[in-house]
Image (cartoon, rainbow, N blue to C red; front, side, top):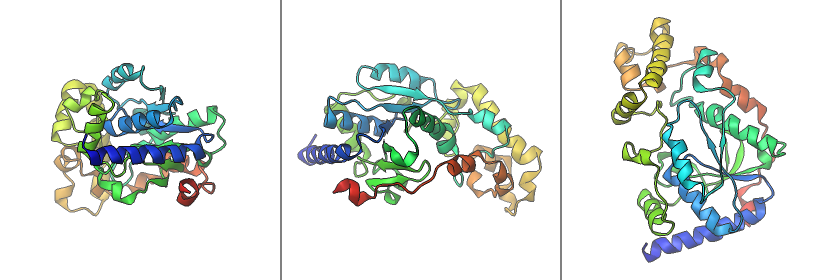
Length: 291
């Protein structure tokens, strides 16, 4: 690593220690996806506050690649990773009437990740999410990083959160993981640029091809449900979309789901029910934690 990157790491470690001193009694945990960003967050935190070893929570559900579990075995000597599971799987939620995932309503976070995390927090004595604290791997590589701050409330789960690597670029993350921590990446990176799910509303042709070849049954079930919901039901014809946006190619192959007004099924949405369970008024503001 060059001097500038070494200094950035040093500054981040100091900031993590400062925050940790204020949140160590708030059921702090690391949101762990098995991806490079959350891996770096875990490595930085473990170095900053050693010998303390906060838990890394990984939510495994029916759209996750099984290789993620194999990867966790590789990391078991380095981090305390615990698996959590959602109340209901993706396909169970679809069968119960929730709308499919879209860019407009990505309910996968509260429903497939959040419910397992909330249950873990409850079992550890937390009275509400606001009384807890999450460390998250949001990096400067993410398109949405400009909408986040180092200390914030993660709205999808109403959790006070720190994003320690918000100013780290992809190349810097890879360099630190390799040169400072000698940590291997998830093997899924050999096939895609992120640790996506088997099927995802942000998928592209390359990822779809890999998923179809390696998990054909999951893909068939995933797309069949959406096809049934949109086309067999006639719902697509009730929208105000232009004809060119009502084709199966557009909706299933290109994943143009965000253009569909799926409000007709919003009353079935489980994400709203989860969010309703979480009250927000106890969040320590950024100044309180950073002072």
